[in-house]
Length: 325
Ligand code: NAD
Ligand code: UDP
Image (cartoon, rainbow, N blue to C red):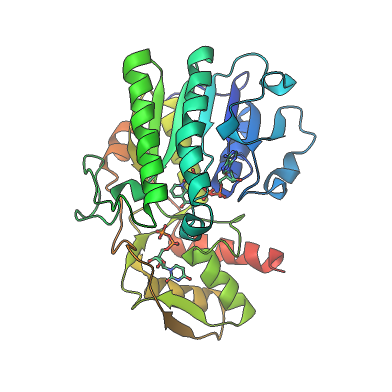
């Protein structure tokens, strides 16, 4: 059965991390639907530039605040109840795992608890942005939601993997014990305009290097794989899940799986770059392969990604070309 829109004109939605890459696109889609949106962000990895085009919009407010401290009690934008709360705040690049480890653990734990408490008070639908990293370095391929994962609980990636696993467990506990309307999306490698060129992830790094004429730094042999998703497809999936009554977790992404060596070569071609590829040391516990099993997203939500990777990469390269300093 097609999903009917639950949140549109007249709905009030809070998006934590709303000035980040993926969340700012979600904010755009919600505002375009007619929702009133409050984005709460401490700018640790995001930027107000990502939502600058919404400045002064009557249905949009950007609040600089750390959600680990709870929500400010007397801010006018937070008065009255929300119909939906999307908890999307968290540094997400593997580079952040070493530079912001405690911040990641705090936003996955304290931030999640505070926003769930607010959702309980408001009777809001709560959506948690979780991750394919919940599967760790998976031993099952592709990864269905029923797979419990293979996570090193004390490794460098554990700050992110375990923070998100804690956030998932907490979300499910509030659902079971307090009757909250909750859902969880497990997001797979997503890319597109507004990624930071220096955020350390493969796609923005390779594109920046290709456009600057620098060597593309492929980690290890580059045989490790990821399935890449253009942000527009992910946003559609997230809104379908939000509108549904599904509890999740539900995977969202694409089946366009490719090796990092192939990705580097494809970006060189699409960017028309003469940079070369160099092979550098690979990070510890880097997952060997990753691709979502999308059966649940298809059957429960009617989700289908549509943007071909060459097209998505081309659009992202053009964005970087226009913005790279
Ligand atoms: P991002 O860093 O661009 O966005 C995260 C935003 O959260 C930033 O604007 C940051 O400033 C904000 N933030 C972090 N801690 C905060 C805090 N304590 N209080 C308020 N704001 C805070 O990263 P992204 O790639 O857009 O990821 C967005 C969400 O999606 C994250 O939760 C991430 O874990 C999840 N996710 C993303 C991907 C992906 O491929 N992009 C994959 C899996 C999961
Ligand atoms: N990667 C790479 N060169 C880079 C950055 C990343 O080869 O400059 C590799 C990284 O080792 C990993 C893959 O690309 O195997 C995807 O990394 P990314 O940080 O984009 O996402 P994640 O590890 O979270 O899937």
